[in-house]
Image (cartoon, rainbow over all chains, first blue to last red; front, top):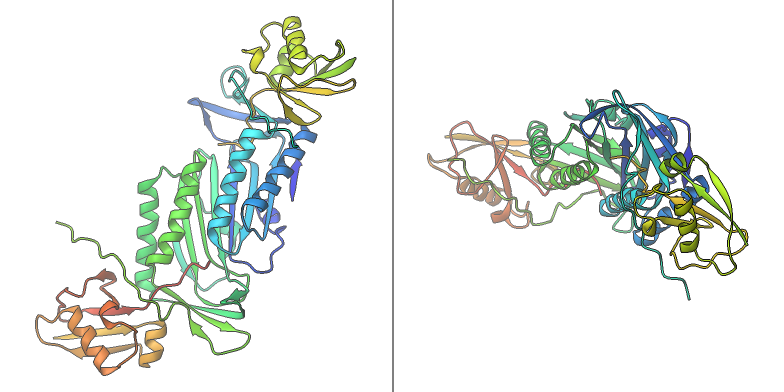
Length: 148
Length: 148
Length: 83
Length: 83
């Protein structure tokens, strides 16, 4: 299950959405907004998405997690809007019978999100003009080969 | 912070014990009692510890996590007593500025716990006599070299 | 044919619009659209030939031929997920 | 000298006691204690020479010399942590 929301992410409520019967291991990752960026103090972060595509990409990532590892369940939530320092911007939970799968799937998910999901953040520092993170990076994505 | 307890582990309450200022990433691992063991249905698990030594070993593991990775904070809770299927027996949370550290430290902690902490579990199946898990395994631990 | 170019985050702010409708020749590619936009708004992205574009919510190569009515999103480097 | 042998989990159940006080010769090692216990309770562990022992809450080698008053815990294979 995936969701993009402007609501505060409640880690317990999200983890409880995992549909589990066999149990074993649950690994979660919470990405939280950092106090410092480039050594400057952050006041607030603004998250923006190309929502339909971000939803599609998160669904693909969730499907890939399940394809690559034997999971009992997985959830990914991503928040948008204005976040204060320390708030959760992304929360992932992966459950599996054995711990290796849950760890690997959770790690995979956050790496994929950072690479492929069209979500951007604008940092507002305590001092200085706000800026879009990575705005001037040269960016390339691997275009998948067309299916035959 | 580490703790061995007979109380139900409340993941949210434990995670909230992390003392965080910089933020970035929080990775948690929950080990939950599995429904099946050796293909048999489990009814209940009984956890026993050599408590003073288990406490000492958990403290060492937490210290090693902090030594090996740059963490903001880390907590490990282990439960004892009788657990039903799906209950959390061990809960680890690691927080760091960047996600790699929190993932690696959390993974390290559970591997170390399974190898070094004197805690045992007795499985009670729905059918058949209860047994101590790994009771007949040949076990060896690496004895650390004496300090000069 | 007509296509819609959409802009997000830094691109949106530098161009000053969320989207622009563009009329292109039949058989025009994503690369042709990128060239058109980067001539119209010079400097909005550091290397126009490396701009990442998604058509119909999928990342595509600059060689892709556009179709009438396509929506082409100009995707600046993503930074979701935190840390 | 006197030492205390402590037993946990499967060892405790097979031996039927949580601990036993044992009188050993001066200079006796952990290995001597293990031999004594495995002769007194044959078959309580599959390979006595591989039994893991902790003295004063630290894993030790069978070569370690015990001291009067030591507590030697017989540690069956651990299985905490789940999955």
